[in-house]
Image (cartoon, rainbow, N blue to C red):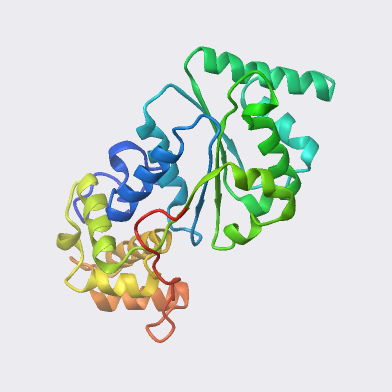
Length: 285
């Protein structure tokens, strides 16, 4: 709707950005380096936490892609699982036939891990929401992927969650999982300058310049409304672009952004989103 008016050849933001589409600012670069190093061990577990919408999935996928080896990535979605459902889910996601008994399923799973290892293929299990799937399912996943559970060297696990993930992982039944935890990576919202860099990157890939489409001061206002959370910033930008077309504006101005934020999202500068205190760029162990 707005692409033609503002000289764009596509929407500036993509739901599943990969490769060069991913903005690699200072925080993303540090997180990727930390994850790559921590995942060098074949059975290492890492956790990646931060506010909803901060870009954890994008960073994890880019980090795994940077490892470079032949890979199998199995995503455990946002669902609640009983401990006996985890093995079934993993086999289904890996395209394996499901034997009737638990022992046979366990044997088939370990055989798959061994086969991938023999072929030089790394296996990564990515849990999208640790609190959602529950302690029992997490404990089962740890047991299934541990190097001492069979003839293979195990598999890597990446745990994602919101700001409460670290506390959730302190459950007594997850003691073995914590012993395998090589990295606790916190992803903080963007600061103003990093958000501006993100906007410039996305608009250049879409065929234009952020500064051409939005007037001066827009990035600062967008940061104040979004709290530096990319998903919220994306929504505000796209809504502002659509509104600008409807109001026949040649350039998106600050007043239009404020109007959209208030009318469509119920935000005003007296009720700004307050993100958590920014954590250091370096990974936390």
